[in-house]
Image 1 (cartoon, rainbow, N blue to C red):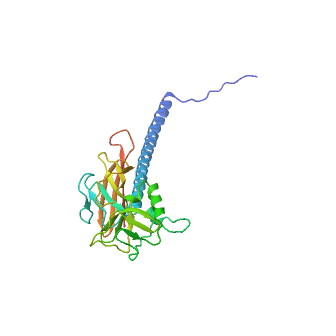
Image 2 (image 1 turned 90 degrees about the vertical axis):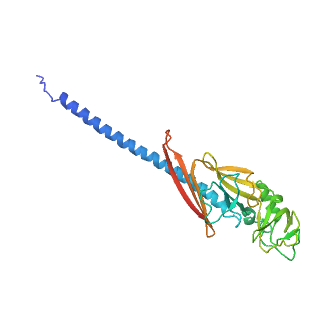
Length: 274
């Protein structure tokens, strides 16, 4: 049988060049699109991380500030500067916020047997004296244990009454609080009180890290000492202002998304605490 050879058309050199050029154009456009998408992802991820970290720090601050005793919240331009009580007009743009907090952990805890809290907040004036406070419905032994577990001591606590009155505590047992100094003439007890064992302070240091200071004397304007915990790094703005019994706090945090000095994103959060 005779074999017949057939010729098939092929791409010319010009056609191949055109195909290669078109593929190169499509590839360059596709790579730019992919690069833009990835860049957008990196920015969004950085903003999300900054937002989450800022929100978590604000939650921790709010949880502690809700126990702040009225008349004890103040500020300083820095840790060593003079303490000043906060008002509606003098509290913005400062780096240190400080307050005395009552012991919410003992107040909200209950003894498993008696059902009593660590301290009730009530003072029986008739059963109290110049050196002891009778506080019915309390279990001061429970309060002492809880405060000790948190790193403090009830012997360093203070009793805060209304009208900016406070007295130091020596011991606490059952339903009796013993003061470290007897009341003098002109000093009074009141029916309601709050027990505090620590002050707190928020400070932005020189490199922009936000720290929480705690476990130092629960006295208004006390020198900041004790322990500290890092709440948030790379804080670019920390502002607070008092207004009609509330405190407005704003925190801005910078998050690095690249190796360059300008490769950063920023997230700002505000919270009003009553």
